[in-house]
Length: 503
Image (cartoon, rainbow, N blue to C red; front, top):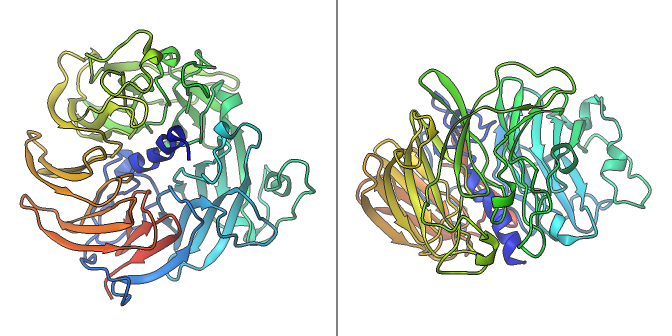
């Protein structure tokens, strides 16, 4: 796998699809607590020990592909997760594909699947063996998702079991590679309601793989545009393309975009998914641009007229690394000492504060990064005034888990899990882990759940003093963030989805 595609799929780890809903047990239909993106769950009575050898803590497992980067989402008695076609479930669909599974929540049995052929041609547009890496967002009986072909889609939760609902009705052709006869659909296939091509609708160029976690607010779907560099990593094919785009959830029509002209300043990709917050009575949508700058815009309150694409109103912007180069940025490709910073993971938007990781691109930039706490209640250019505290890291693509007085963050460069004070950023403890860190910590039920690319799975006490409760090894690398819902912790390795729970 190329270094640049690794960064692309790492964004899944940044998304941290762990939600927090009131009550003891609840579904996880949306990425992050009300789209704050905070990987902290209100689930209780969760397990503190797993032993694959004896089956302790394992309720069920489900076979995935050979590389899996998407976090499970749980709703309506079902588990939804993306993967590749490394272990085909349907003999009609062989070869490299993007796959999206709908599984039974109680047993892990397959209910239906969505098969998405690769784009073909230039591998940098749809990297081999990287399937559907984006997480789903679910509302009622609708699934909103970005697939491996950079298509924003709306699917029926029930699949084809209740018929082909439309208005899109050409699922047979959509699931078939170009040049082949259409593969007929059946009750175990997905039902597409609408589909929008992101590249053509937004006028962007995506690179390596498409990734984004759709933020649902009212009738609007907000998405990082995926606008990126070309295959040389030194040019921007679509410099005028937007970085944040908005769609009508009912039709897939693009209705709004940012007007910040970030394109020429994109160092690598635009993969930081947007987060939602309310500050001083105003609802804001914040995301990290491909230029390493954090932006906040007013959320839309009214649907633009048909055929109209409006510009979002920026409330503030914040540059977390003022010492980074701002001109001729692509001359710093592969410079490990000096380079622009990038924001890969989504910001965590809590109250009037935002927590984010920022720093050198993992394969193309400097080995310097930070966890920042930023004031979100200002306006204009807040670079000089908004920093509340800063905690040094080596490199990180992790979304921080802000659990009351404690915040947990992964340092990819140092291979450590770090615990700091939320109020001050003061370090409390660190723990060296085995393997690269492509995921983010999940905090739930007084515990911290965490995995690495070596297949190591850890459970810590979520406390000021370090206490390791469990360390074990699962069957394959853990790249995707974890999820918790209805008393179960879900861990997706490259090859297997684990549903972990107390007996």
